[in-house]
Amino acid sequence: MRSGSVGEATMKFNYNSEEINQVAVNQKANYLAAADDSGDIKVIDLEKCRLQRTLRGVHTNICSSVQFHPHRPWELISGGLDSKIVKWDFNKGRPLKILDQGVGAAQPGPCGQLFNPPFVHALAIPEGKVSGKTSRVLAVARGNGAVEICDVTLEKCHTLRSCNYPSQDLRNLGESTQLEICHREEDAMEGMHLSAVSTITFARFNGSKTYVISGGNDKCIKLWNWCNESKISTNPEGSSINSPIGQLLLNVPHTRKVNWICTAARSSEHIFVADTSKSLTVLTVT
Image 1 (cartoon, rainbow, N blue to C red):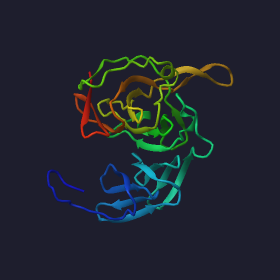
Image 2: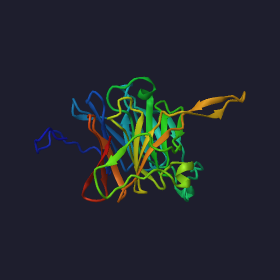
Image 3: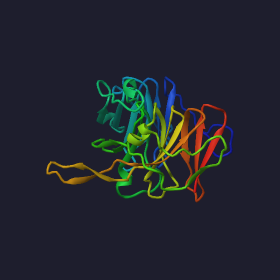
């Protein structure tokens, strides 16, 4: 860990035995979690500079992502290439809930996604102060091209599939990327990525945190309004009910596979994209 412009490390930890895929810090900045290739999560006490707990024995493959629960100080959520999402009590070192979409759970998606398993490549939780139902959600990037919104209790999850024409004017600062309205038949039916979703984040420039941005190995960046509802479902009595299917606001083709996406909480609404090249791309929302 480094502080400000100082070049030297202020803290250094060597607790992980395998390659680290993601680190996360809780809201009070007193705990750090590091997920690695062994499937372990190392939880480090930053105030005492010591290992608090090792979480293991659930993930049977690479642990790719980890996030702290925004409202429960002793809980965190992890995801892995075993297609599991796990909610942990890191004080006691035990799992509280396991959502497993592994064996027999791969779902066919658009353009030959039948053989792509639903690995968990990334997790995201809204940053900053949020209220209402937005404060209780988790976004999931899956290997089968799906973008999921789950309750942080892991009791409910749904896949964003809806594709609607953009309701906002969004422009790209770069010349190489062009805005593409989702008009292809498969996107109109599903709106899913055509290969693995590699990164996902809640837009910080959207105060209500209802915008989710995803990027994938299909070289596409998508902006979703996950709170959009449509009366397409029916209950046992036959009347329609609201179904939170989401709305695809934007589909931007990129020049390379997308590795990471982030935003800034500013009046200038930028999306920063890191891909397999040496350069960063900046998209702007107006």
